[in-house]
Length: 248
Image (cartoon, rainbow, N blue to C red; front, side):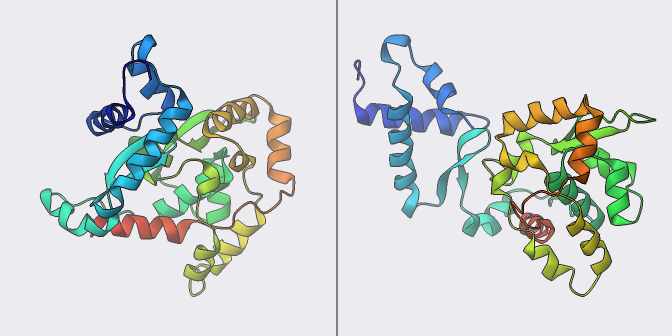
């Protein structure tokens, strides 16, 4: 292994992941090594599997998200770890969670389209909060009067919710249960809108596709009108549950 034993490589990769400020991809890990010592990506994957196995009996876990691999504290220990900080995570409104859900599953989507589904206006503060959290961003503009902005989720959104891609979004069925006793009409409207084709793409492909569609008004119209196969079904309740967990 060009001077590095397997055990040395394991400990080096572990150190890199622990010291990094965010997730690291296989390519980023490989780039750290001098060329003559650089391990193949397949070997790095083997190392990561070993590191994941080592965390089985510890309070941390090594997970793969959209941005790469990272260590994090297991959810079982969150109640204790959260006491390290006096400031509690913000609690988000139902309107914000519904807006985020619509963007996640129908992207790229305009603010007006979100309002049509929800039946109420989407406050600027909601959009601003989602942008400040770096969960959504503008990927283009619809070529109609006013050229409204098209919103899509970001890689940071996937990383925050421990998702490798949009296809890992939880099923929408949970929202149906949550909406059973209130706002059922909103749920029925949501079901009638086609799921985003971006759910079938990688995050990089999704960004490119969203930008291409933003420049092509005909394809955008087709996107909203065409009947797409059921890739997944709802997400709001699951997202809400994750927010609730963060606030505990």
